[in-house]
Length: 205
Image 1 (spheres, rainbow, N blue to C red):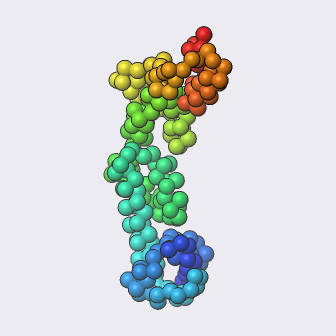
Image 2 (cartoon, rainbow, N blue to C red):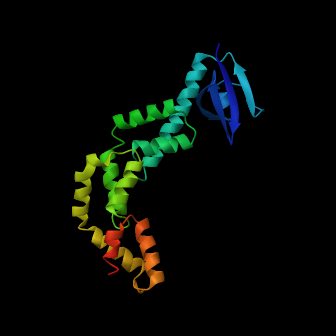
Image 3 (spheres, one colour):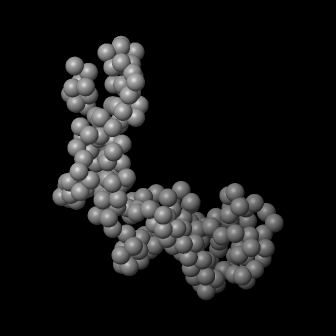
């Protein structure tokens, strides 16, 4: 027989079907699912029907899907980013996989669109090396999208030297880069934006 253990976490009851995590539901969901409204922080419900379990899974899926759609409604996201965000919301991996599969099927997720959007967002703020590293950190193989990245730089008409000069004008316009203290701040600032010593040094000599 099916037994579900519920554990209160913040305002959500995390459900474990025979110790398998199947997602979280709210207190207000219990009546709609035909279950007793909980009073304890942790409790078991025995002899849960397969139909009720399916309803719980569907409710969890719907919430995960709506969360994911909300994420991509404001900005392009990679599948890895969606996965990370949903995990932080304590959705089970099985549900997350289903959501990502459906979003890929409908064309809602596109690594190429994400790469282009990410580069355009940070092209004037960071080095290409740092941008590519941050994209890779999101689970995308940048080597597959070098042409897209090249095209963004060409389309924006900007080089890394332009980026460095822009950062200098924004942060160090009226400061003497030959001053030791200013020089140290400048070096640290530019390195945080992903530029190597060789390129930085060109502006100090």
